[in-house]
Length: 196
Image (cartoon, rainbow, N blue to C red; front, side, top):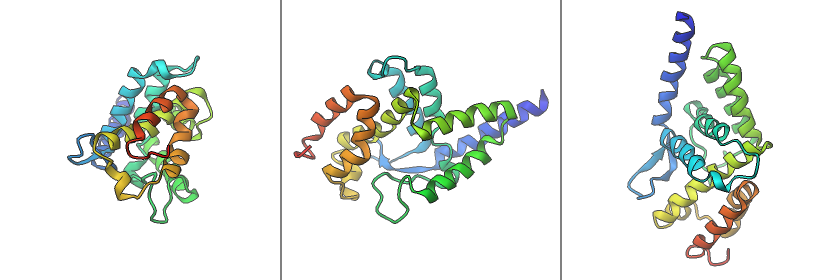
């Protein structure tokens, strides 16, 4: 019991470091950059509130669990913005390998049963093949869009994001898991991207 609790708290203290990882996206008011801990919490809330946008059969409590875990690897790897142009592309093989190493290390702090369970949820989210993971990935892509809309274009300006990039990097993922949501968001985007 003592060893198990020690490992659980070691993981929880490590997870606290996610609050120090700054993301490219700002808060909705544009006042400062969002941290990855805030992002994960906000996404869990998105899942709870937007559950009616999920496909039939999606289990929202599993989606929430995935979203609480999905960015823990950023403790080691940092945030890799989806619109970055710096050669370390979001989703590249090198980033995926680094994130897999980080997941093994971070989830490895836990007792083996819990480690296996949470790492499997993280891997499911990354693969984005199950209905739960597809919906979770949709929410992960749409939340920064909503922040950029609220902050007057936010990081779209910084990264010179085009409508085509937004559709291919964000829209396809959101539409796959929440088509009605993407339809609504696209209407909001026309003020910044008339060609959408």
